[in-house]
Amino acid sequence: MELWTYLVPILLTDMVNPVLFAFLVYAAGTNRPVLLSSSMLLGHTVAYLGAGIALATFFEKIAAYLSVPHTIDFLIELVLGIVLLWLAFGTKKDTGKRPDENTQQFTVLSAFGFGAVVNFIGIPFAIPYFAAIDQILKADLSVTRSVIALVGYNLVYALPFAAVPLLSAVLGEKAKPLLTRINAFLDKISGILMPLMLGLIGLALVLDATWYFVKGTPLF
Image (cartoon, rainbow, N blue to C red; front, side, top):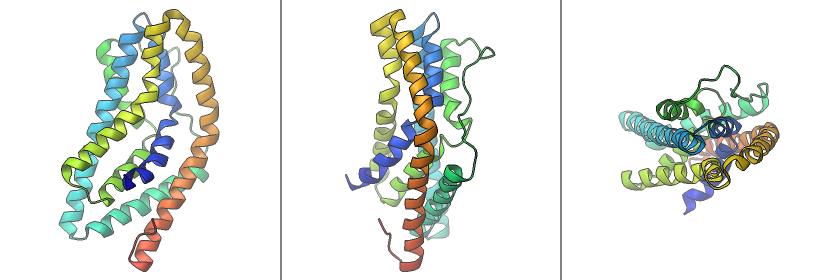
């Protein structure tokens, strides 16, 4: 449970994702709203989980090769913290790609594929997930428990986005104006919340890693 005290703030930051929601709303506006938006969300969840397992395995192999697992974990944490701070304070506000008149007409398969890549198209939307993976590795869990933590993270992450196909199924055509308003609200607040949350998490990661390299123990 202690791990989740660190994962929850990262998870909340990860959820402030106007890009994924915008494309889910776009899919919900087609002639097959429930099927296409569900396919897109499923593609995203499968790809996010797969990428998480692959990255965790890669980081662990590097740590094992260098025989300094904790040092590598905190070095990764330091780098991610610096990147998050840079994204929060050193770049222009990135609202990411949005659906427009040139956006393709989705099939079930293409919606799944697009969902799989949408979060990796632009920064900063994938970076908090990398920080979550690093926190799971730092916890020194067994392989099984690490995978369970990643699965749990991804399932909780997907829950608010599942509102799109759910509302489409329940309300039908009436869901479209509601989803459009939610999308506009999320788009607006993300420009304020995203830099703030990225900055706070980045600062915490930098402080924790720096404290480890100076004192030999983590701050958090």
